[in-house]
Image (cartoon, rainbow, N blue to C red; front, side, top):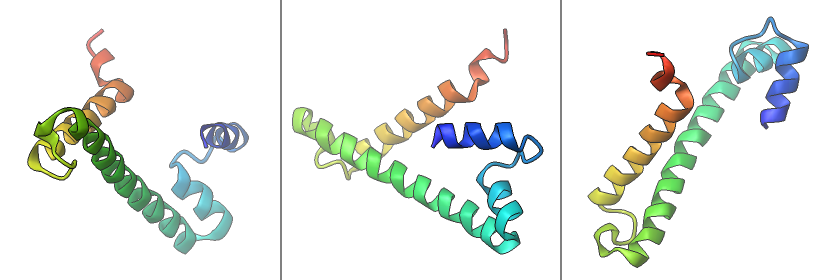
Amino acid sequence: MAFSFKNLSEKRPDLDAGIYSYAKDGFGDYMGFNSAWGYWVSAFLGNVAFGTLTFSALGYFFDLFGNGQNIYSIIGASLVLWTIHYITSGAHTAHL
């Protein structure tokens, strides 16, 4: 997927709004909206599934996390997700 977006950005540098702009340019406003909405929903659900699976596995070793569906798992998954966002967003390099 990363290579696909890299290829698209090299071929169409004028389109800079991600998945939405590629779908909108090729298929119109309606499909652009649906592709952006569908991508967001799949990313959201994927993160929830990833967090539940990860903390369910950790629950095998640490009773605190149980089956991955308690408040400690929710807090842990949220911290992991925000940490990944912080690292990948480049916000930590803004002060350099």
